[in-house]
Length: 108
Image (cartoon, rainbow, N blue to C red; front, side, top):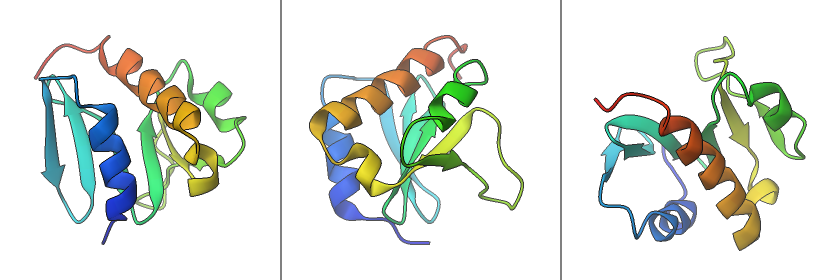
């Protein structure tokens, strides 16, 4: 599975000031915070780990849908279509939501 390098670059820029972020490839690209998957890019779509408490609210946002990578939705993860993060403010919103959730998890 490929990923859009332009979207990946936006995410790299969003994580510039974080020292604990690593990029890992598994057919697409994921951004890790303290060893926990935070967000990523699948094709041209943003994969956002928002957590179970913010999951339903995230799904109400325009361009967001359930993440069904394996055919079964993963609660706490959403896909966001490119139109949902085309502005810097939109991308910052999603990244912050992901980082805030991942910050509640123990480091790996």
